[in-house]
Length: 487
Image 1 (tube, rainbow, N blue to C red):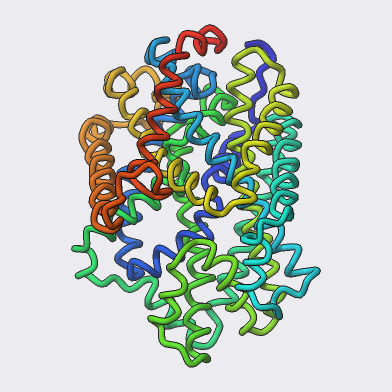
Image 2 (cartoon, one colour):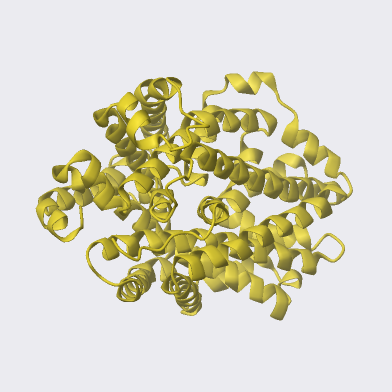
């Protein structure tokens, strides 16, 4: 396609990729899972899966996007054949479905940043504030959902260089700076050293715990954005000499650094908090690990209320959280926008269509926490299937052929060796099967007989039902999709 936009420099794809990967999951989910899984042993397992799951899938995605210069549906169809376009459609839909409620989360982050500054949130009862905002079925979450999508679509409307690249070059350095400031402040609090010891001390017996490894795998899979189709979309705008291996590794390590900085900001603060309260470590962690919302929007205000200049640092925390949310949200908006561009629409028309649909289809998640949690459960698990589809693409194409024809770069200074074949043919599928088997087992043993009911919002049944309906629709309309998407 003539006049296709490209990132102005290699730093463009690096910052955009980091923006895609570093999101709210790094800042609110990672510290919670670390606390839940016992600290250092989890971090060891999490680093292992950075190399065994996340980086290989990022390499695959970047290579496909760079080679085909098409969005998710067009690129899958180009490599696999037109009859497999439904696979690309499912990958795209999973991420789009996440976008519908992720924009709601982005709105929450904005609300709490403004509330910290203008509503003296630090002196209010955080649980009551959260309930009155998110659980009262008021229209305020809808307003912030609209605001988040409006800002995100405006960025994508401006284009690749003036929008995505320029904004991420501001957001990502600012985000890392804010996380660093928060981490430094946390580690000098009273008893913060206990938190650091917990975070980085490896209990060797915990490494024998199967759940620690599976939680580490899921955190790595979802946090890096591997298998989402997002970095594939950004790779469409890279230059020919872009090296997928170097870029993927940089994004993977940068994402991990952000997660560790967030943990260093939260965990020591938690330990400092319970050291001056009449609470045991077990009591605090029991509250922390209940859910993402509990840690971020209820416990964070409580934690910062106990430290000097707490309001300032809480504002910095929610500003960093908002930056992380926006950098990921715009990548989701761009994924869908790219698909419509491949179908012949202009960027401006595509963005308007995506923004409007995103607001309408995200509305139910903004007003109903039950609907929000169901969609989060269904489509975050759907990312496992998306990752599986990327494995299938490489296996069907042939791992050796994929390495030589698609991953290879003109300079060939950094190349993928035969280990890639083993990872794609053996290790990635085994990890997928382990996660699916664990999910089935955990659901069966904890759902009191309703683990397969489609009417249970968090059951295996409702997840498989929604996945099946989406896949069936995409298979039935596969020919229509391929006619409209440029191959």
